[in-house]
Length: 380
Image (cartoon, rainbow, N blue to C red; front, top):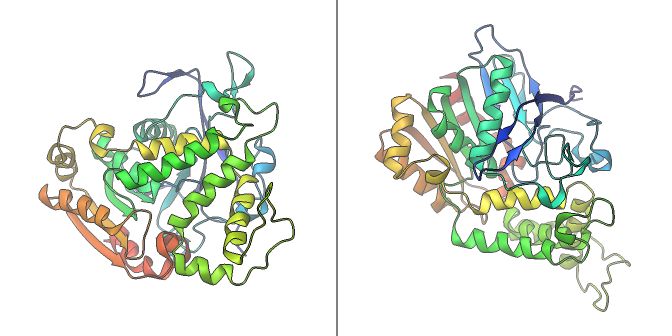
Protein backbone atom coordinates (compact mmCIF):
# COMPACT_ATOMS: atom_id res chain seq x y z
CA UNK A 1 0.00 0.00 0.00
CA UNK A 2 1.55 3.36 -1.03
CA UNK A 3 2.42 5.69 1.83
CA UNK A 4 0.13 8.66 2.36
CA UNK A 5 1.51 12.03 1.29
CA UNK A 6 0.25 15.59 1.53
CA UNK A 7 0.49 18.74 -0.52
CA UNK A 8 2.69 21.59 0.70
CA UNK A 9 2.48 25.20 -0.41
CA UNK A 10 5.18 27.76 -1.14
CA UNK A 11 3.90 31.31 -0.68
CA UNK A 12 5.80 34.17 -2.35
CA UNK A 13 4.44 37.42 -1.00
CA UNK A 14 6.07 39.74 -3.54
CA UNK A 15 5.08 40.64 -7.08
CA UNK A 16 6.02 38.03 -9.65
CA UNK A 17 6.77 39.31 -13.14
CA UNK A 18 5.99 37.10 -16.15
CA UNK A 19 7.84 37.06 -19.46
CA UNK A 20 5.08 38.99 -21.22
CA UNK A 21 5.28 41.81 -18.66
CA UNK A 22 2.21 40.76 -16.66
CA UNK A 23 2.41 40.88 -12.89
CA UNK A 24 0.98 38.55 -10.27
CA UNK A 25 0.60 40.32 -6.90
CA UNK A 26 1.64 37.12 -5.09
CA UNK A 27 2.58 33.59 -6.04
CA UNK A 28 1.61 30.22 -4.65
CA UNK A 29 3.13 26.90 -5.72
CA UNK A 30 1.67 23.56 -4.62
CA UNK A 31 4.21 20.75 -4.39
CA UNK A 32 5.01 17.41 -2.82
CA UNK A 33 8.32 15.89 -1.73
CA UNK A 34 9.68 12.40 -1.11
CA UNK A 35 12.88 11.30 0.63
CA UNK A 36 15.18 13.32 2.87
CA UNK A 37 17.15 16.39 1.81
CA UNK A 38 20.88 16.09 2.46
CA UNK A 39 22.43 18.70 4.73
CA UNK A 40 24.19 20.31 1.76
CA UNK A 41 21.12 20.00 -0.52
CA UNK A 42 23.10 18.04 -3.10
CA UNK A 43 20.67 15.12 -3.51
CA UNK A 44 17.63 17.08 -4.72
CA UNK A 45 15.76 16.12 -7.90
CA UNK A 46 13.16 18.41 -9.47
CA UNK A 47 10.42 16.57 -11.36
CA UNK A 48 8.03 18.21 -13.83
CA UNK A 49 4.64 16.70 -14.69
CA UNK A 50 2.90 16.34 -18.06
CA UNK A 51 0.12 18.50 -19.50
CA UNK A 52 -2.80 17.35 -17.37
CA UNK A 53 -0.78 15.83 -14.55
CA UNK A 54 -0.19 17.15 -11.07
CA UNK A 55 2.47 17.51 -8.41
CA UNK A 56 1.22 14.28 -6.81
CA UNK A 57 3.67 11.84 -8.39
CA UNK A 58 3.92 9.12 -5.72
CA UNK A 59 2.11 7.81 -2.67
CA UNK A 60 -1.54 8.34 -1.79
CA UNK A 61 -3.00 11.81 -1.35
CA UNK A 62 -6.75 11.78 -0.59
CA UNK A 63 -7.24 15.54 -0.49
CA UNK A 64 -5.74 18.85 -1.59
CA UNK A 65 -7.13 21.78 0.38
CA UNK A 66 -9.02 24.39 -1.56
CA UNK A 67 -9.54 22.72 -4.94
CA UNK A 68 -12.95 21.18 -4.36
CA UNK A 69 -14.26 18.30 -6.43
CA UNK A 70 -11.45 18.39 -9.02
CA UNK A 71 -9.38 16.01 -6.88
CA UNK A 72 -11.13 12.89 -8.10
CA UNK A 73 -10.43 9.41 -6.64
CA UNK A 74 -8.50 8.41 -9.77
CA UNK A 75 -5.88 11.03 -8.84
CA UNK A 76 -5.33 9.90 -5.26
CA UNK A 77 -2.51 7.53 -6.21
CA UNK A 78 0.61 9.17 -7.63
CA UNK A 79 1.04 9.14 -11.40
CA UNK A 80 4.63 7.79 -11.17
CA UNK A 81 4.21 5.48 -8.22
CA UNK A 82 6.25 2.74 -9.91
CA UNK A 83 9.21 5.08 -10.51
CA UNK A 84 9.61 6.96 -7.23
CA UNK A 85 10.41 5.32 -3.89
CA UNK A 86 12.95 3.16 -2.06
CA UNK A 87 14.89 1.01 -4.51
CA UNK A 88 13.02 2.36 -7.54
CA UNK A 89 14.40 4.29 -10.52
CA UNK A 90 14.26 7.54 -8.56
CA UNK A 91 15.43 6.05 -5.29
CA UNK A 92 14.18 7.99 -2.28
CA UNK A 93 16.68 6.17 -0.05
CA UNK A 94 19.26 8.39 -1.79
CA UNK A 95 17.41 11.33 -3.33
CA UNK A 96 15.04 14.08 -2.25
CA UNK A 97 12.39 14.56 -4.93
CA UNK A 98 10.30 17.71 -5.42
CA UNK A 99 7.40 17.88 -7.86
CA UNK A 100 5.54 21.22 -8.20
CA UNK A 101 2.17 21.96 -9.78
CA UNK A 102 2.54 24.36 -12.70
CA UNK A 103 1.90 28.06 -12.42
CA UNK A 104 -1.53 28.44 -14.00
CA UNK A 105 -2.49 25.02 -12.66
CA UNK A 106 -5.67 23.89 -10.97
CA UNK A 107 -4.31 21.73 -8.16
CA UNK A 108 -3.22 24.38 -5.69
CA UNK A 109 -0.78 26.66 -7.54
CA UNK A 110 -1.78 30.19 -8.52
CA UNK A 111 -4.00 29.87 -11.59
CA UNK A 112 -7.14 31.13 -13.32
CA UNK A 113 -9.44 29.67 -10.64
CA UNK A 114 -7.44 31.35 -7.85
CA UNK A 115 -8.73 34.52 -6.24
CA UNK A 116 -7.35 37.73 -7.71
CA UNK A 117 -6.52 39.78 -4.59
CA UNK A 118 -7.30 43.01 -6.46
CA UNK A 119 -10.89 41.97 -7.22
CA UNK A 120 -11.75 39.28 -4.67
CA UNK A 121 -13.02 37.08 -7.54
CA UNK A 122 -11.40 34.29 -9.57
CA UNK A 123 -8.86 35.48 -12.13
CA UNK A 124 -10.71 33.78 -14.99
CA UNK A 125 -10.06 35.49 -18.32
CA UNK A 126 -7.68 38.02 -16.76
CA UNK A 127 -5.13 35.39 -15.74
CA UNK A 128 -2.11 35.95 -18.01
CA UNK A 129 -0.39 33.56 -20.38
CA UNK A 130 2.49 31.61 -18.89
CA UNK A 131 5.66 30.32 -20.53
CA UNK A 132 8.14 27.59 -19.69
CA UNK A 133 10.54 30.30 -18.55
CA UNK A 134 7.89 31.57 -16.13
CA UNK A 135 7.61 28.08 -14.68
CA UNK A 136 11.38 27.91 -14.23
CA UNK A 137 11.52 31.29 -12.52
CA UNK A 138 8.71 30.32 -10.13
CA UNK A 139 10.26 26.96 -9.26
CA UNK A 140 13.68 28.54 -8.71
CA UNK A 141 12.06 30.61 -5.95
CA UNK A 142 10.63 27.41 -4.48
CA UNK A 143 14.09 25.82 -4.46
CA UNK A 144 15.54 28.91 -2.80
CA UNK A 145 12.95 28.62 -0.04
CA UNK A 146 14.00 24.99 0.53
CA UNK A 147 17.69 25.90 0.69
CA UNK A 148 18.53 24.00 -2.51
CA UNK A 149 21.24 25.47 -4.69
CA UNK A 150 22.35 22.93 -7.27
CA UNK A 151 20.03 20.07 -8.23
CA UNK A 152 21.28 16.56 -8.72
CA UNK A 153 18.84 16.32 -11.65
CA UNK A 154 15.82 17.72 -13.40
CA UNK A 155 13.45 15.15 -14.88
CA UNK A 156 10.51 15.75 -17.20
CA UNK A 157 8.27 13.53 -19.31
CA UNK A 158 6.20 14.98 -22.17
CA UNK A 159 5.47 18.68 -21.59
CA UNK A 160 7.53 18.32 -18.42
CA UNK A 161 10.52 17.60 -20.65
CA UNK A 162 10.15 21.07 -22.20
CA UNK A 163 10.25 22.67 -18.76
CA UNK A 164 13.22 20.51 -17.76
CA UNK A 165 15.11 21.63 -20.88
CA UNK A 166 14.35 25.26 -20.11
CA UNK A 167 15.41 24.91 -16.47
CA UNK A 168 18.70 23.29 -17.51
CA UNK A 169 19.50 26.00 -20.07
CA UNK A 170 18.25 29.07 -18.18
CA UNK A 171 19.91 28.01 -14.91
CA UNK A 172 22.68 25.64 -16.03
CA UNK A 173 24.74 26.21 -12.90
CA UNK A 174 21.90 24.74 -10.82
CA UNK A 175 21.63 21.40 -12.69
CA UNK A 176 23.97 18.38 -12.83
CA UNK A 177 21.86 15.89 -14.82
CA UNK A 178 18.87 16.14 -17.16
CA UNK A 179 16.35 13.40 -18.03
CA UNK A 180 14.03 14.29 -20.91
CA UNK A 181 11.37 11.71 -21.78
CA UNK A 182 9.32 11.90 -25.00
CA UNK A 183 9.67 15.67 -25.37
CA UNK A 184 11.37 17.94 -27.91
CA UNK A 185 13.27 21.13 -28.73
CA UNK A 186 10.59 23.19 -30.45
CA UNK A 187 6.88 22.52 -30.87
CA UNK A 188 6.17 21.22 -34.37
CA UNK A 189 3.65 22.70 -36.78
CA UNK A 190 1.59 19.50 -36.49
CA UNK A 191 1.35 19.79 -32.72
CA UNK A 192 0.53 23.48 -32.92
CA UNK A 193 -2.41 22.66 -35.18
CA UNK A 194 -3.62 19.84 -32.92
CA UNK A 195 -3.37 22.15 -29.92
CA UNK A 196 -5.19 24.90 -31.81
CA UNK A 197 -8.08 22.51 -32.47
CA UNK A 198 -8.32 21.98 -28.71
CA UNK A 199 -8.27 25.72 -28.06
CA UNK A 200 -11.13 26.19 -30.54
CA UNK A 201 -13.10 23.38 -28.91
CA UNK A 202 -13.04 25.18 -25.55
CA UNK A 203 -13.42 28.70 -26.93
CA UNK A 204 -16.53 27.71 -28.88
CA UNK A 205 -18.33 26.16 -25.93
CA UNK A 206 -21.18 28.63 -25.17
CA UNK A 207 -20.47 28.26 -21.45
CA UNK A 208 -16.83 29.35 -21.78
CA UNK A 209 -17.66 33.07 -21.66
CA UNK A 210 -14.09 34.07 -22.46
CA UNK A 211 -12.90 32.20 -19.39
CA UNK A 212 -15.24 33.83 -16.86
CA UNK A 213 -17.41 30.83 -16.04
CA UNK A 214 -16.69 30.18 -12.36
CA UNK A 215 -19.98 31.69 -11.18
CA UNK A 216 -22.03 29.74 -13.73
CA UNK A 217 -21.77 26.54 -15.77
CA UNK A 218 -18.27 25.43 -16.87
CA UNK A 219 -17.51 24.62 -20.53
CA UNK A 220 -17.69 20.85 -20.05
CA UNK A 221 -18.53 20.03 -23.66
CA UNK A 222 -15.61 22.03 -25.04
CA UNK A 223 -13.13 20.63 -22.52
CA UNK A 224 -14.31 17.08 -23.17
CA UNK A 225 -13.88 17.57 -26.91
CA UNK A 226 -10.39 19.02 -26.37
CA UNK A 227 -9.43 15.98 -24.33
CA UNK A 228 -10.76 13.63 -27.01
CA UNK A 229 -8.65 15.41 -29.63
CA UNK A 230 -5.51 15.07 -27.50
CA UNK A 231 -6.15 11.53 -26.30
CA UNK A 232 -5.60 10.13 -29.81
CA UNK A 233 -1.99 11.33 -29.64
CA UNK A 234 -1.25 10.08 -26.13
CA UNK A 235 -2.42 6.50 -26.58
CA UNK A 236 -1.39 4.36 -29.54
CA UNK A 237 -4.36 3.58 -31.78
CA UNK A 238 -3.83 -0.16 -31.35
CA UNK A 239 -4.16 0.29 -27.60
CA UNK A 240 -7.27 2.41 -28.06
CA UNK A 241 -8.79 -0.36 -30.18
CA UNK A 242 -7.99 -3.01 -27.57
CA UNK A 243 -9.41 -0.91 -24.72
CA UNK A 244 -12.49 0.15 -26.65
CA UNK A 245 -13.45 -3.40 -27.54
CA UNK A 246 -13.89 -4.08 -23.82
CA UNK A 247 -16.40 -1.24 -23.45
CA UNK A 248 -20.13 -1.37 -23.89
CA UNK A 249 -21.99 1.45 -25.61
CA UNK A 250 -23.84 3.40 -22.94
CA UNK A 251 -27.52 4.22 -23.35
CA UNK A 252 -26.81 7.88 -22.55
CA UNK A 253 -24.28 8.18 -25.40
CA UNK A 254 -26.63 10.33 -27.45
CA UNK A 255 -25.83 13.83 -28.64
CA UNK A 256 -28.48 16.30 -29.82
CA UNK A 257 -29.24 14.13 -32.85
CA UNK A 258 -26.42 11.65 -33.32
CA UNK A 259 -26.39 8.36 -31.43
CA UNK A 260 -22.95 6.87 -30.74
CA UNK A 261 -22.56 3.90 -33.10
CA UNK A 262 -19.61 1.82 -31.86
CA UNK A 263 -17.32 1.11 -28.92
CA UNK A 264 -14.56 3.36 -30.22
CA UNK A 265 -16.75 6.45 -30.19
CA UNK A 266 -18.12 5.45 -26.79
CA UNK A 267 -14.60 4.96 -25.43
CA UNK A 268 -13.46 8.42 -26.54
CA UNK A 269 -16.62 10.06 -25.22
CA UNK A 270 -16.02 8.35 -21.89
CA UNK A 271 -12.46 9.73 -21.78
CA UNK A 272 -13.76 13.24 -22.35
CA UNK A 273 -16.51 12.96 -19.74
CA UNK A 274 -14.11 11.56 -17.17
CA UNK A 275 -11.55 14.29 -17.76
CA UNK A 276 -13.87 17.25 -17.20
CA UNK A 277 -14.55 16.08 -13.65
CA UNK A 278 -10.90 16.51 -12.72
CA UNK A 279 -9.53 19.46 -14.71
CA UNK A 280 -10.13 23.16 -15.26
CA UNK A 281 -10.68 24.52 -18.78
CA UNK A 282 -8.72 27.72 -18.17
CA UNK A 283 -5.75 25.77 -16.83
CA UNK A 284 -5.91 23.49 -19.87
CA UNK A 285 -5.76 26.52 -22.15
CA UNK A 286 -2.82 28.07 -20.31
CA UNK A 287 -0.72 24.89 -20.43
CA UNK A 288 -1.43 24.01 -24.06
CA UNK A 289 -0.71 27.64 -24.99
CA UNK A 290 2.66 27.30 -23.22
CA UNK A 291 3.28 24.08 -25.14
CA UNK A 292 2.13 25.48 -28.48
CA UNK A 293 4.50 28.45 -28.26
CA UNK A 294 7.45 26.45 -26.98
CA UNK A 295 10.82 27.19 -28.56
CA UNK A 296 13.89 26.33 -26.46
CA UNK A 297 15.83 29.25 -27.94
CA UNK A 298 13.20 31.82 -26.99
CA UNK A 299 12.67 30.34 -23.53
CA UNK A 300 16.42 30.27 -22.93
CA UNK A 301 17.10 33.75 -24.38
CA UNK A 302 19.54 32.38 -26.96
CA UNK A 303 20.08 33.10 -30.64
CA UNK A 304 21.34 29.66 -31.70
CA UNK A 305 21.34 26.08 -30.36
CA UNK A 306 25.12 26.32 -30.00
CA UNK A 307 24.77 29.35 -27.73
CA UNK A 308 22.01 27.68 -25.73
CA UNK A 309 23.75 24.36 -25.08
CA UNK A 310 27.22 25.81 -24.58
CA UNK A 311 25.92 26.68 -21.12
CA UNK A 312 25.21 23.00 -20.46
CA UNK A 313 28.68 22.03 -21.68
CA UNK A 314 30.34 24.60 -19.43
CA UNK A 315 28.27 23.38 -16.48
CA UNK A 316 29.36 19.78 -17.08
CA UNK A 317 25.79 18.50 -17.42
CA UNK A 318 24.89 14.95 -18.44
CA UNK A 319 21.70 14.33 -20.44
CA UNK A 320 19.55 11.23 -20.87
CA UNK A 321 16.99 11.55 -23.67
CA UNK A 322 14.26 8.98 -24.26
CA UNK A 323 12.29 8.42 -27.47
CA UNK A 324 9.27 6.11 -27.78
CA UNK A 325 9.12 4.49 -31.20
CA UNK A 326 5.29 4.41 -31.26
CA UNK A 327 4.85 8.00 -30.04
CA UNK A 328 2.32 10.03 -32.08
CA UNK A 329 2.53 13.04 -29.76
CA UNK A 330 6.25 13.86 -29.60
CA UNK A 331 7.63 11.95 -32.57
CA UNK A 332 11.10 10.33 -32.24
CA UNK A 333 12.43 12.80 -34.80
CA UNK A 334 11.92 15.55 -32.22
CA UNK A 335 14.23 13.89 -29.71
CA UNK A 336 16.73 13.21 -32.48
CA UNK A 337 16.80 16.96 -33.19
CA UNK A 338 17.45 17.69 -29.51
CA UNK A 339 20.22 15.10 -29.28
CA UNK A 340 21.77 16.48 -32.46
CA UNK A 341 22.06 19.91 -30.84
CA UNK A 342 23.49 18.38 -27.67
CA UNK A 343 26.09 16.41 -29.64
CA UNK A 344 27.05 19.42 -31.74
CA UNK A 345 27.66 21.41 -28.57
CA UNK A 346 29.71 18.70 -26.89
CA UNK A 347 27.19 17.98 -24.14
CA UNK A 348 27.58 14.48 -22.71
CA UNK A 349 24.37 12.69 -23.62
CA UNK A 350 22.77 9.28 -24.12
CA UNK A 351 19.78 8.71 -26.41
CA UNK A 352 17.57 5.68 -25.69
CA UNK A 353 14.74 4.57 -27.96
CA UNK A 354 12.06 2.62 -26.10
CA UNK A 355 10.26 -0.01 -28.16
CA UNK A 356 6.64 -0.01 -27.05
CA UNK A 357 3.13 -0.64 -28.29
CA UNK A 358 1.68 1.85 -25.80
CA UNK A 359 2.54 5.10 -27.58
CA UNK A 360 3.29 8.35 -25.76
CA UNK A 361 1.84 7.11 -22.47
CA UNK A 362 4.51 4.39 -22.27
CA UNK A 363 6.40 6.45 -19.69
CA UNK A 364 3.40 6.11 -17.37
CA UNK A 365 2.64 2.46 -18.07
CA UNK A 366 5.97 0.66 -18.54
CA UNK A 367 8.42 1.62 -15.77
CA UNK A 368 10.73 -1.32 -16.45
CA UNK A 369 11.69 0.17 -19.82
CA UNK A 370 13.03 3.34 -18.20
CA UNK A 371 14.25 2.28 -14.76
CA UNK A 372 17.70 0.84 -15.65
CA UNK A 373 18.80 3.88 -17.62
CA UNK A 374 17.47 6.48 -15.16
CA UNK A 375 19.00 4.58 -12.23
CA UNK A 376 22.33 4.46 -14.03
CA UNK A 377 22.41 8.19 -14.72
CA UNK A 378 21.32 9.22 -11.24
CA UNK A 379 23.80 6.93 -9.50
CA UNK A 380 26.76 7.45 -11.85
